[in-house]
Image 1 (cartoon, rainbow, N blue to C red):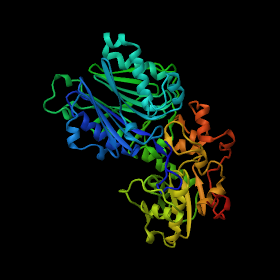
Image 2 (cartoon, one colour):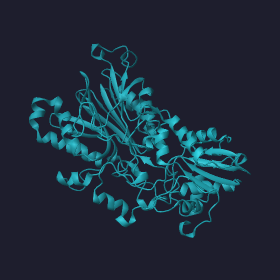
Image 3 (tube, rainbow, N blue to C red):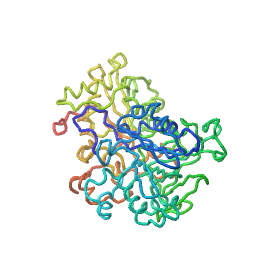
Image 4 (cartoon, rainbow, N blue to C red):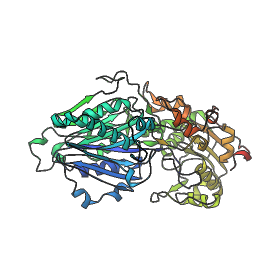
Length: 530
């Protein structure tokens, strides 16, 4: 699904697909723990939420549209008793925005059943659906497609379900996974097992934590809980929220199976082995820039500290005389702190964010759109009036919101507005699970720096270079997916998917933008003033 229309009034940012969590704790409150884990991952998706629980006899799935707190209450959670669970919070990038497309997806088969939650996006969905003989409308999304492929594989091998029913889902999943292309993580629950999967390039994160059974299982825990419990989550703060201890990140290409025997790893992708060798790491660099919570740890590095280093690099490479460094809340705060510290310019707040407003209406004209932005951000005029401002944000996607913010600051009395962005220009669409619309919707796709300055109405604009961004992550020799910044896609994109986003090869971005801005305000160019 495409993102918010360009004439909407949402604070347009890159949007990541989903957050996933899985809990294995026989005799423990697995539904409640899944709820808490999803609550910690709410920033990764606000469209729908769901939990699937297995009591080793049946799997029960509850899902609804809206935020986690809207989908579940104490009454609903109390009825979800079991030994293992998976949870999902969704922002759609493929498929419709509807209850039917909410996750986890469920399949009940002869002799077995399973539920599946998916974070990311497949790039060969159409090809997979065609090769498996599916008709239009059979599945609602790429996630639903994967569930259907697993079900088809189980139905094609009934002897496994008859003789080894506990292995049916595990073996079918391992056989389906090598056919998938894109960026993805999965959590899967059958009646007895919790399974986690990370794609061979590790584009999206997934981590493993251990639960202390004495604290989580309760006074009635029996001998079956002696081995403790396990948690899978998109980010480690979700582990901490449920009381789990971080063990490690799931490796690219790894399929981890958790049951009464403990944890074991399988390597179903041809390019991986029991040690993970051969799987090229390509973690999405925007996990460091924007997606992940600031208290998340990725590849051993704290995200908040990395974002502060990004701001410090900006201060060194794009200095300017100013009176105040201020962030665009909330994602620009760490980088603004780093910029202020490195530059010696005072740090302060210039905008207040309304945290209690969700998606708003599609506005009919620019005047109403600008008023819509004020429902989410409002200036602190005494901090702005008569001052030269350095405004720090993490990224610019379409630029409509940024331009409205600049106009708001000038109306509040700002003498100068110097914009600093803690990532390179966002020029290419993502096919792996980040939703930013089509190529022609991206502000930097075919504009140079002066044109972007003119469109935004700023006195100067500076981006962070890719090398500086990677250095700021602190990951030594880390491999990242930066396709949205460079057009270098680590997983092949089919011609059909490219045409849908770019239209034709002639429409693909062809300009290279630099990381530093001029210090003179550019005249507003009529060609980009719309």
